[in-house]
Structures are given as C-alpha cells and as structure tokens.
Image (cartoon, rainbow, N blue to C red; front, side):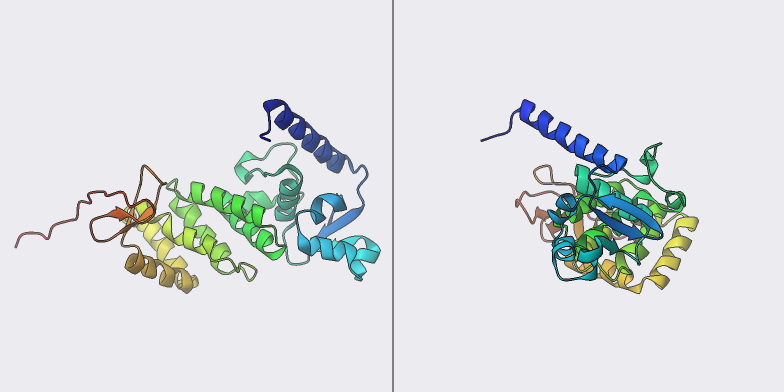
Length: 255
C-alpha cells in the first residue's frame, strides 16, 4: 500500500525523535570511537543498516563484550556525518555547517563538499552501507557537474587513493561528469597548473580520463535520460534510450 502524506509525516517525526535521543545520549547502548571522540549510538540503528556493525555487536568479539567499536583510520567529522545518515537518511555538506554541526577540530575548514562525499562513499563501502554509497555518489555527481574545477581536482586524491573504495562507480563518475567543462577551464593557467599537479600525483586518474575518450567520445545531455549521457560516436545516439542527437563536429581549418 502506498504511503500517505500523513504516514510520511509520522515516519519523519519518529526519525527526528530518534535523532534527538542520539543527540541527548538517551538510551544509547554502543560507542563508536574515532580520533579521540566518543559517539554514543543505538545498536538497533547502526546494526540494522550495516552488516559490519551487526557482526561487531553480536559476534564473539571484544567489541561486542565492551559495546565499543574503534575506527582508528577515519576522521571524526566524517564519522559524525555517517552517523547523521544512519539516523536521518541524509547528511549536510561542510558549506551547510551550523551550530548543530559537530567538529571540535574544525576539520570542515579544510574539507570541501566533494572531498566529504568521497570520504563518506569510502566509509559506506567499507561498512557495507550501500544506500549511503548511493547518496554520496548522487551528491558528488551533482556538485562535480557544477563547474568547480579547483574543488573537483582537489577531490581526486580522495577518490583514487582510498584503499576502501572497491566500487568502481564512484571513480567512473568522477572521471566522466566534469568532462563537459574541464577542457574549457584548462585554458586558465592556474587551473592548468593544478591539473598538471594532480595527474602527476594521481596517475590512475589520468589513465581513466584518457580511456573515457576512447570508450565515450561524446558526452551529451539527453532530454529523455539525464545529463552527461554517453552517446554512440556514429550519429550521436544515446546509449540508454537510443534518441538521436545531431552533433556539430569541428571542421579542419582551411590551409
């Protein structure tokens, strides 16, 4: 049966109340510890969405006995955003920070939204939270297409150097989506210098970018599908819905 507006409102109210219990530390029964920061959480919330946390809470492990789980390799700010998602189904960007945002070390001052999305995708992949991966990919894709060349280039190390990102979808999006504006922006000397530095530091990105031009010569907006849709090179046909688009190809200069 389809949910009604009243049901959706009630569900939202319940989620808001549970999130408030988390903020107030009420009825919490498990601790996530990261970078010296203790996050008091509810087992039912984290275990219902992550098989990794479920195993830690129910298995014959030290974490289960002590009701504590350490995340030594993560940033507390990013872990806090992951917990926000587990409780509310969403998380805010660093640019949206307000009085309720947690960060004693001001980590957001040096982290862009694209970097946060990449780091959260890595956490979602590591702790087997596919819905979080889907959301971070959606947010990254949307912002990466907004013509922010410096922010985009700065995020690539987080995308390609993360040892926990096994899912290739994020890397593919990071390479494909900005193609529409990056070539134009590279005419700016400062952007070109940043780009040259990045491809030196992240050679996998340079390799993947080159491959996309072989595999997807044309990226176009398909009105029936979505932005940045790959087209077949012969005739400019959308690979998804087969809609034909006339593509203007540059002509060689007259001698």
